[in-house]
Image (tube, rainbow, N blue to C red):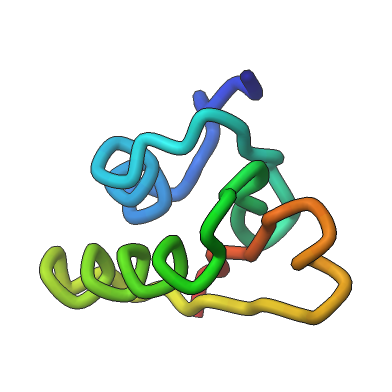
Length: 75
């Protein structure tokens, strides 16, 4: 798993709540990978962001579906 030492505190809160098994640190956020049910995964991510009032957004493309991924980015 990637090191999360230098992450934005809001991204770290998201990671702690979502507990992804695999994620990649990006310049402006993280990419969550290996989600088997992408629709439920994105819905759960939205719920966490709303519940914790995080200033984050979700980005997803069709290409990411192949590896069960989506991005959580700083606004």
